[in-house]
Length: 257
Image 1: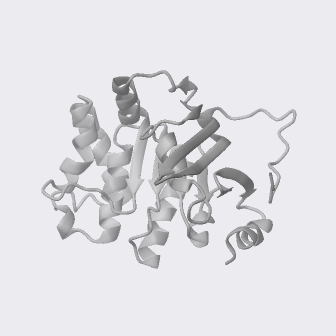
Image 2: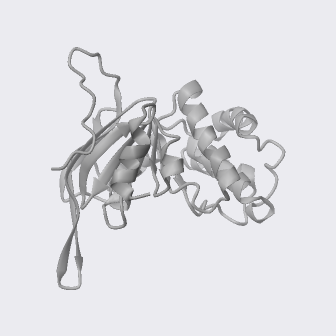
């Protein structure tokens, strides 16, 4: 396997607790009479408190990886662990509860319910989990931190794209998840608003201890992360930290920008 950047040596270095682990993940799909290998034995560990970006060309397996990490699909082989908890043998009901309690999702298209206010959208996961009272208190802090406290009574159509994505982020955070999974979260935003949303992710990781896994095709977005991993043909082929001079050149080598 080609490795663009070797992982840093971790010998004799205490390792932070893993928020998320993929162990030998493989996934195939049938398309007509053809078998498509989406992931092939992929190994990935995301420590708690890290902002990780996943990059790769179209068809590299990014979306499949996000779906498997988010327990939205099942692997053909391998396993996913959330905060050390194996998920391969869990029932559908247990997986649903684990997604609800341990994972937060942020999508490119926001996925807000149009006839609910921002407040109602944010509180919906907590209401489903029977935690509405505690979530009401959390909402005050989240709305202030995300700058949407004046917009909570508005419906999605009355909000700008950036405000909608902030509402979606608050919804993802309302149950205090172990990991936030973000699928092209700036894809429908202008560059300035996208930068603001990415800055929110970064600040949350640094100051609040969030763990974020973001799939993106945008090198500028990826450079907001702490670490970037690169996929090609369903395999992890390289990685880089973003605090070094080699980060931009590594992205250029991989995605050709």
